[in-house]
Length: 80
Image (cartoon, rainbow, N blue to C red; front, top):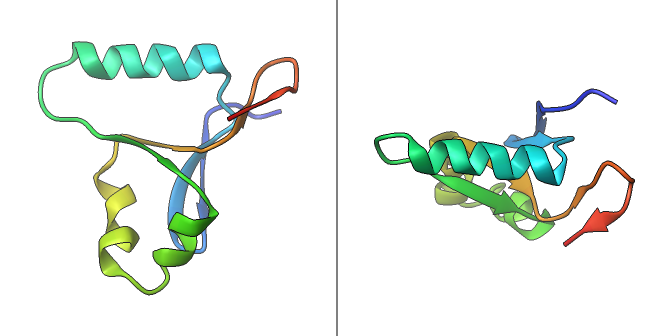
């Protein structure tokens, strides 16, 4: 499995294939760095809203990371 890739789903960029450890490490680095940084989670409703609403369409472009609402741990278990 390729880890840490960014994919585009209906025009919305989403960071995929991160373990919970990877996510926590990235969040820690962002909080420890200077400046304003945005991390968001997305879901199917957000992606569908982005098809009609320019706010949602461009929101992901302002975020350092855009994680799916659910992601898999190394053991394959889904986390919500």
